[in-house]
Length: 299
Image (tube, rainbow, N blue to C red; front, side):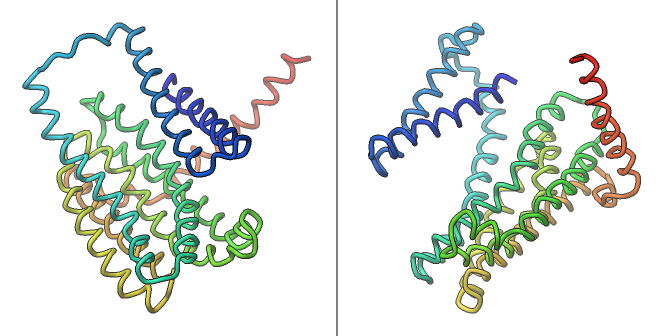
């Protein structure tokens, strides 16, 4: 809870700093850089204060066994994160090579909008991983159940963005940015399919089965680059979006396959069905009861 409050506070303060430095003081790009530097320094000081208050901030010590075990897990995980980020952004480097600068700007906006949908699986995965690592006798199907419901939420978000992409882009950025809608729509299927992998990888991480993601991300980045060089000259920004969708889907498919192979959970556990309906019916009924419980107490 404390970390969530801190993260929200950081976003608010960061926005205020940007507005003051850029809009009020007219500092331009330098103001944005200073705002980011101030926020990073502030975060370090705040976290240090929390650690000091909790009594865990003290003299550093070296535990070779912990270092060795952590390195075996953390280094491959970090390297996989770097390769994953490269897979997410390599298309932008290729667009910068093949297309005019304004096309790159359009595509960057499309990516930023599409990846906001990943807030849903990102939040789910962040909450799921600590639970899995602290539950030795957990049911391995739990990650599949969570992924199944996350698919529904993310799918709804993707459908909504797909439907309103043209109108929303024109309203937010102006008619000059209408070209953003096309690559945005091509990106959405990949955003949807990779949602499954983003949730299931929490179970694999809890089992310390993370090394394969390094090679998977590297191969995906290379395939993404090759697909971009083939499709962008033929389809423009739509080709870049299609390339990302194909590689994201490949990554998700491999993660699903590895999860099923490692846990023995059938892949059908990932498919939403009628058995999920009572959960949402119950949530809806609870939601409808909230006003009835609040209004009497207010009167």
